[in-house]
Length: 440
Image (cartoon, rainbow, N blue to C red):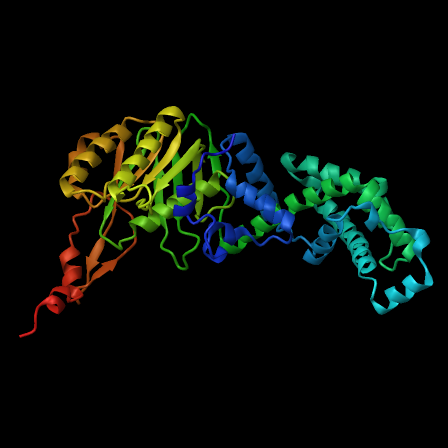
């Protein structure tokens, strides 16, 4: 069963952002082939919610990371082969009896484009199979979840489709190219596609492992469901250079985080970092932290950059309420969700926002099966929630006023509720009132 995720959450966390270099997918998309990119994208679109499946994938990545396995695949081999296999029309088949003098001359001067494409693909297959045989020795001690693919690769290499590549050179006559074309593109096409599909997966495993090592990521540890804890040391956002790392932990009895802090103090970035690491952990991927232990959840809903809807006539507040209703329905129907709301009820007046925040937070605190992270500027709501301190964790990002009267931000998560009120100070520092005053 897939981890539940929706478009709003994917957008909030920049999973598939444009440009790709500014996306979480882009961090890992260093694969060599189009087939590998397709598999990687599927992994991102369908994270996992079964602990066994997540552990299996983690162990595969651990195998590649611990051994620092470098794949010797050449993307040009795959490009040539994929283009070649895209045309299996009988009229494209190379026929040995067509080796006429005219065709030999055309091949010699490079005029026979079709033959050149087939020849390049057959030669690429020889080189690819050589590399796979070398790789097979490296994968002999692969974890159980990968062994089936490894055994299948070995079996395929022994079939008629590929066995000839063991002793064949890359200097091929027309007759041999025609014979191998018949084997690869027609009689053995199903074997060839199975062969490539396994190599695509291996390319993803090797690439993701290398990215994880290069980025200094770690593999998370899946805890038993009954433990229902979360522990992250050194959490940071993977798209930010020199990001300040923070620790966060939640226990079975304390599953709600009430987050406060001034504007620009780091709340939204922290919430995006938290959502991103939860997402990657449920993919079984390396995560941007020093250590992570987590219990698996069924899905995640974030509300960080929620737009209004002019076409539907929705105000921002009504969009918030509709979003909250959708999340509440899913919490009741599915359970075991991770819920993140940034600046809950920012679209209404302070009094209503205060009352609504308190009531919703109290309702969240009664749900021990879900994780809730809620940020707000209504710090008075925090005082009203002190009676739920056993189930709600109060944290904030502090602001320090420098000697020049300007706020400085530590980006360090601190226990408690902020007392910072620097809005007017920032307005005055920008000389807005002074600028607006009429000149005399």
